[in-house]
Image 1 (tube, rainbow, N blue to C red):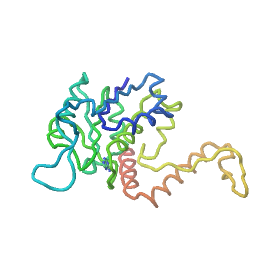
Image 2: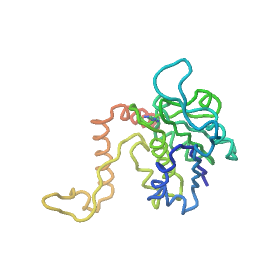
Image 3: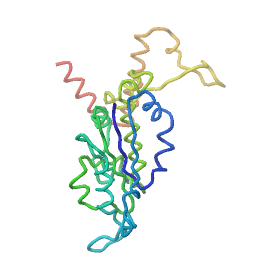
Image 4: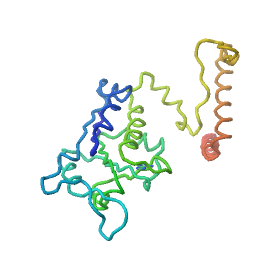
Length: 234
Ligand code: ADE
């Protein structure tokens, strides 16, 4: 069972999405538990804001250290990974998703405004993670992206775990094309090879499609794939 705590000033960003599809099924299947912690519950009367002006001046507001620490200290934790999604973090990838899917407890701290007090990052956070080279307005959406990619890798969450093994990135190749019924719609046909029943040829065809797509779209991945596969043969 993976326990996921999410410290957020905007729980409503998360709740409706965590109640859908595989994110919900992961809970029903007893593989995941979500604990959403509302940062506003950790303000005292004098301190009515979660953000304040930056020391030293500059643009934008900074999330305060105290409510975040109080929220964090309210959870009883057992050596968790603590993730802070941020555009200046390490670029997220499938390997990191696998690594995190083996954890027992993860805390997400969702940032807003210009950022959070650096002392939170220095003393609580174990992993600063970016989901791509662009900037979002909040930490909830990247947290959801990371959570979604993690939970689907926990055995027993997906109906067919084997499908996760064929994902893009699992073996450094992008995924290939998929078809289902009907065989023909308007003048759009399913490739004959898939209807041939020749499983070896189908496998070969699918690998070629994956290689072709990876070659045109992601030469960096293709290089990794070739390196790994030449290594295996030695
Ligand atoms: N917060 C804002 N932008 C982000 C990004 N690209 N990745 C992770 N967290 C973010």
